[in-house]
Image (cartoon, rainbow, N blue to C red; front, side, top):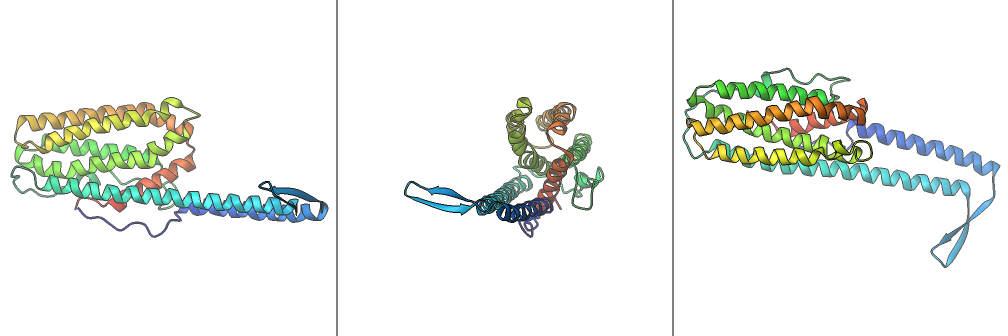
Length: 283
């Protein structure tokens, strides 16, 4: 598995727009403060702790408040990007470990051609605005179609070909789960807390389903692709995936569209596309 380098900077397109808005707001406050100072030259007493009192113009107080606001906003944006990049690096290590175990299983697999089915089974996400913006729901729906096509190939393949096809699919499943949790369900749990409690709690159910599938993936790793038990476990994963997709696309995604507007969905979609690019794909 090959991994590309991390992004080129912490100011992604959506965050640049956000910071420009903050700076313009501060500039407007500065102009307003200057006008207010001319019309209202009176001073206001400000108490520092309990031992000192100074008199400051109201305009200066407004400017100081705006400065504190922009500092807090900048720190918050920077901290969120650091957290995302840490999650990306952590996932890179986990995918590398999974790839290593999948490519050296406790059985011998007859060499087969490498099929990039997850990349060719469906078209890549269609940008909604420019090359870097993609709706998160659209992105996940297309990934679901790719996963369905990949499972069909595994289930229909000859016993001697199943192992090679599964070695390509398993890491992609893990990556998909991490992208969903990092870019969608984790921030959504915060944003939906006051709007849709059921949607905010969906992340817990999603994580429980991921853990269940993780156990099945580990059981599959211990079996031979030629065994009927191996195929049975793969079918169990396939069934869990089908149920997961139906629940997301039928119930969860419509609710998300009511909590996040189009701009927020595009931001999450861009993060998903960037995260998948950073993780690399099976060569």
